[in-house]
Image 1 (cartoon, rainbow, N blue to C red):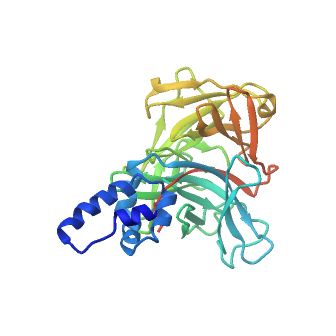
Image 2: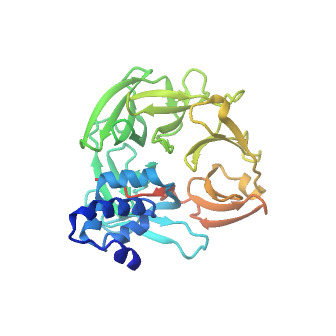
Image 3: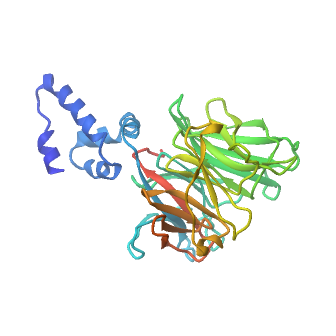
Amino acid sequence: MIILCKLFKWKEKKENSSIRHDLLVEILCRLPAKSLVRFKAVHSDWFSLISDPQFCHRHLQHQRPCQKYGTIQVRNTHTLHPSLSLRIMSTVDDDHQLVEIQKAFGMEVYGNSLFPSLLGSCHGLLLTSVSFWLENFILWNPTIREYQKIHRKIFAGSKSNTVAMAGLGYDSLNHNYKIVAAVSYRWQQNTSIEVDIYDLNKSYWKTKNCHFPYESKSLITPAITLANGVPHWHVKRKNNDQSVILSFDLVDEIFKEVPLPYNILDFNFMSAVDGYLCIGIRNSPMDPLHVWKMREYGMKKSWYVLKMSFPNEFKCRSYLMPLGFLHKDQIVMSLDTVGIAIFNITRQHYQFVLQTDNNRCYSVVAYSETLVSPN
């Protein structure tokens, strides 16, 4: 950092300042987000530059963001001011980084009934909720330690009559992030769903009704958002219970189906591995897990099977899916959505790095280190 300060020391000559500024931007765009957060303290001009939304977008385009993994947890639930924490994975069990939002839920929501749900991750932003009815969201970038609380109004008496799914995505045409909360009420027609869309640039919700001949897999279904910014959900058809990969086009604001591999009519799990869509197929907990990865988005013929096998200790897990690669032969695995392990394919060896004893107060997260602000 000292070398950079000397190299780009600002001078008063206006004819040279633009050249130095362009060169500075090109170099900074190629540095890790975590380093740039520290570099804000170098100079007031650097602070303004690195904080600028246009620079953040340019930085996002110039490099492959560093992938991080961790677990989200509510801490201090015995107090009036519980905190939302992210424990970031390391290869050593007792050396995890902890990032927290103090007094995350205010005075109105507290107690042992808080169960954080990770609803989506996009470009370093994490979308979380502690409400089964998707009333209150927290949009959080733990790298720059900024967050925003977002409230969604719901109908009175609808809490016991909803099945919901939510996610976070990026509208590339309008350069805007959007939260999608799709809620199905029992009094509505069976083939429709009410979709609330939050526009981050305009800070408001809008509602539209969409054709929806599907059922969600659980009370709240989180989204898997790919590198292209499109959120996806694992749902099933109402008429035959077959699994479907459902995406939401944030430009046209409509649901679309993503084609499955040839001769595959159903699957068990879904995840994103380094930004690419993956599905897992397993007939029973003791059967082998077959993981398919889509190399070219939306292309049916681009699906291929990842060559990997897991020890018997893994096979007994009810949920087992890869989240990403640390190295060519090391895979980060989500275990029952509450624990993380690193599995070495070559040596057939695994190491638990975050294990939570199936505590519902945890949720596994995979995200990128970026400068994108949630505000």
